[in-house]
Amino acid sequence: MNVQYPLHSVLSYSHLSPSYHHFIMSIFASTEPTSYVEASRHDCWIKAMQAELHALQMNNTWTLTTLPPHKIAIGCRWVYKIKYKC
Image (cartoon, helix red, strand yellow):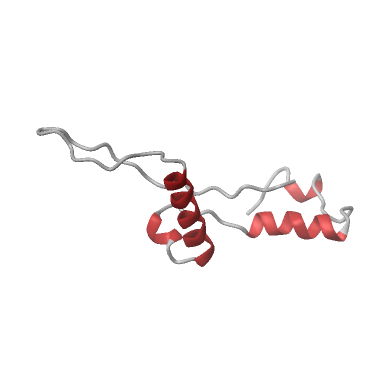
């Protein structure tokens, strides 16, 4: 592939300290799942989901109840994001 302005000509990691270089590379190596099925394959995401559900229960975020007749429950979904502490 012929790129007119290659990124490596203006961006270099060679001047970073070894610890910061390792941190930057770990960010690029991390991937966020795009579905529950994908997340459920990794222990770290399962633990994160369990912790989130536990926090919601401890905060009394919802109350289970029966729906009135002819009503449909709203849906929900998991959003997976990695939070980096810099």
